[in-house]
Amino acid sequence: MEQFTSGLLEWSGVRFTCRKAGKGFWLRSIIVYRLPWTWKCSKFLIKLIHAGLNTIAMIFAIVALVAVFDYHNAMNIPNMYSLHSWIGLAAVIFYSLQVFLGFAIFLLPFAPVTVRAAFRPIHIYSGLTIFATVIATSLMGITQKLIFSLKNPAYSASPAEATFVNCLGVLLLTFGILILWMVSKPQWKRPPEVNAKVLQPFGATPEGRKGESTLTDGSNGVKSDLKVNSEAARKQNLKLDEAGQRSTM
Picture 1 (cartoon, rainbow, N blue to C red):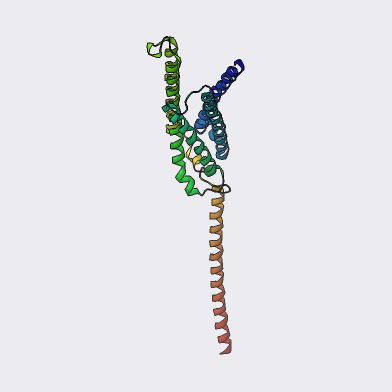
Picture 2: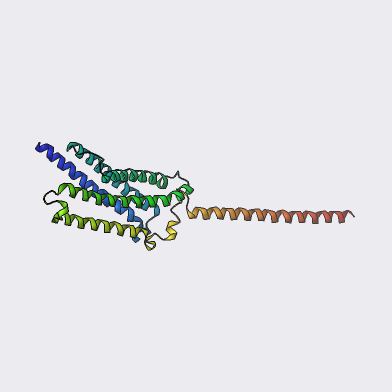
């Protein structure tokens, strides 16, 4: 029995650790585009960092979710009965979908530029929405835990534990608002000349377009030169014909 209880406590610790680590990696992936020192890096490198941090956060979230279900089943606690569990599961599902779609559209070279341009605002809005949903889920979770855990005195009596955790919830909410403010602030966005390269597919660069225009101008110049040369040749032939007619006369 002691071994069983110890295993549950360890699994519960894994759940707690994965939740906190996942949120930490996710927050870093959100603000990686807003850090001024990253503006000097290539857009593709920042994409890789953003995708890597989100992938690690997704793995931690899935492990934490599995730990929750295993802990509930071992302790005979019903699953998926609270609003906290409903929104939490939905957030993990949509977050995983967000990571997979972002990887397929923005990292792989198969998506057309028009698809990337159309999906980009959806990707940004859905990412911020999921982040706000996770903050709300965390607040509901800590409140639910306090209600079930505090018996004597009860949560309604506002013991020291309840006040402490409520303060942590306020700090969590404030932190989430600051992150959303940082992401939405125009001054924190990457410069326009960097953003211009976002929707370029692999192998297509502004230099490449410039080269194409140079080739086009060159071909037009060759055509004009050929036209001038043909006109000069025609005039020379006319002069020769006139000279031949005069000599005949």
